[in-house]
Image 1 (cartoon, one colour):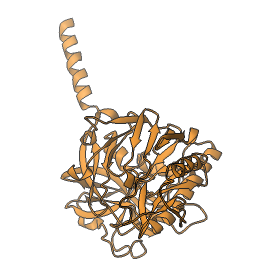
Image 2: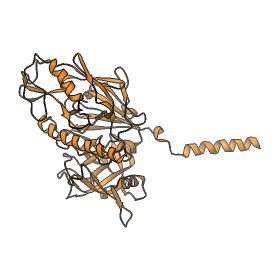
Image 3: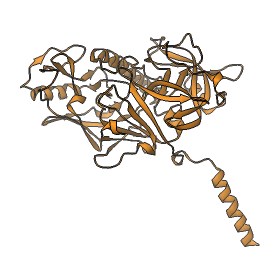
Image 4: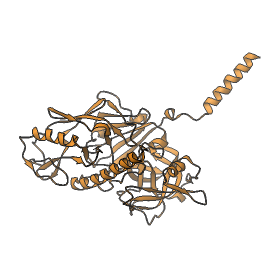
Amino acid sequence: MATTRSSILVVVTICFLLAAPPAYSERRGFFRATMTRNEPAINLTRAAHKSRQRLSILAARLLDAAASGSGSAQTPLQMDGSGGAYDMTFSMGSPPQKLSALADTGSDLIWAKCGACKRCAPQGSPSYYPNKSSSFSKMPCSSGLCRTLESQSLATCSAGAMCDYKYPYGLASDPHHYTQGYMASETFTLGGDAVPGIGFGCTTMSEGGYGSGSGLVGLGRGKLSLVSQLKVGAFSYCLTSDPSKSSPLLFGGAGALTGPGVQSTPLLKTSTYYTVNLTSISIGAATTPGTGRHGIIFDSGTTLTFLAEPAYTLAKVALLSQAANLTRVPGTDGYEVCFQTPGSGSGAVFPSMVLHFDGGDMALKTEDYFRAVEDSVSCWIVQSSPSHTSIVGNIMQMDYHIRYDLDKSTLSFQPANCETF
């Protein structure tokens, strides 16, 4: 009798374990999408303006978070929609409706223009139509994602128990950069894989610069982001050096880094963004200090790289001291180190540049930190940050496979030919 009871108990236990939902770290998926730069030819003048605008908002959000003691910058960054961000291609609904939207590692919410959306930006891009999908459903106020928005004062519940949201991008002094609508659930198709039950913002009104796509896909570290909702634990991308070509965006095990040259560095737990510790910088034969306790943020939506003081000035001095053979010319638009270069850079030899992180070294290609800004003039595309905030921009990330592992709280990178993925 005891043996029979034990057998029954074992069977019940096994059934319970099989029926229970898998834990976050165990629910692995393998999804693939593509990203395309929304500005095929990089305009470095426009990139300087847009990147500095995004930097200032990021810095202000982090300062507000520090002042409140929350350690979390809840308001997302203003997007670099017309100056060098990346659009992600995917589909929504059943049957699938193909869309593209800005991919942003600096925010969490996923949203798309819904219906005609006559008061939405940008105009002219495709919209998602809920009435054409059999898998669409509105999200109730009781949902976890709605409660997350409510906890950040970004959502309210109407009389009909529908989760209405207004999600701002930028500062309170800039009220004209936001998306507004109601939360819903839908099937997303990434590559050839359909993923049901993804929560997103069905936008009925928006203002601001979001490029030429149909919305935005948040890839941040919060609960609302696509990464968190897919429950894959990690994602990666590999930005091609040719901005006119598409770049792979991989979720889960499909983006695992293997082989020689893989290096990793811990993500700082004190930041809601993808921040790591930059310990030092090598410029040619010289090594200069990094950015200290504030770290440096890897950001897909900022084109240029910014270094806080004194890291910027010390690296600049090291660069100039080893470029005496080059003819220096005045810079513009925040580019302080510029040289005359025959044939838009051909023939010029610039000092090498390596970023040293806590646990890994990123040796950069010359074109990742020096670019032609006009005929016969090339500039160091690293600029001074007026705050403690430093950023590794997307040009400097090109030709590296970069993986953001939320489970292990690490950022890994490996030199790669991104066109071969």
